[in-house]
Figure 1 (cartoon, rainbow, N blue to C red):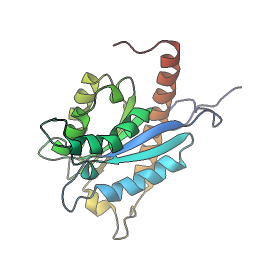
Figure 2 (cartoon, rainbow, N blue to C red):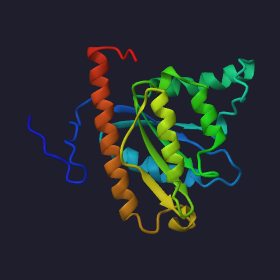
Figure 3 (cartoon, rainbow, N blue to C red):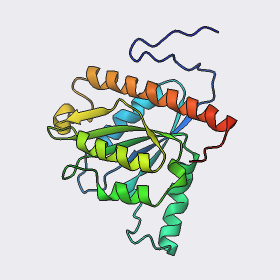
Length: 207
């Protein structure tokens, strides 16, 4: 069957009859008064409207993992809720603010508690902040995920002066540019997820 090429991305869309990609959205801030949940709600809407995804959520604010990496009853219980969502995912979207030119400690802690769950999977990055839009945080995350044998997709979504971009009801004042950027990013995430799914069927990843 012949497929057309998406005019936004240049990537041929995957057939809607294909098995949906299991994607986990990681909300990466646990600060009091955080803005992440507002952007996460918008992002979940974009993912659900995109063909071929099943979405789950992991929120670092609900993880409450110790930084000592000690295996305690409390950490074991928290991991029992979180790790299966990461392990089952075929792709990830990581939503991060920028704190002091980088990403939050709670997000790094969640990442570091896991290893095999990230391997040979694609990661899309969405960021928010002030003038930088959180882009310095995403560049640091690319290095971290490369070390974990994950593949970050090229295009991102970033919100400069994020609070001003949304109204008091949590809706974007001008959704055209963010929606377009999300479409491109999700197309790339879908392509990588399907490509890696097929590659791992042919030969297990051994890196």
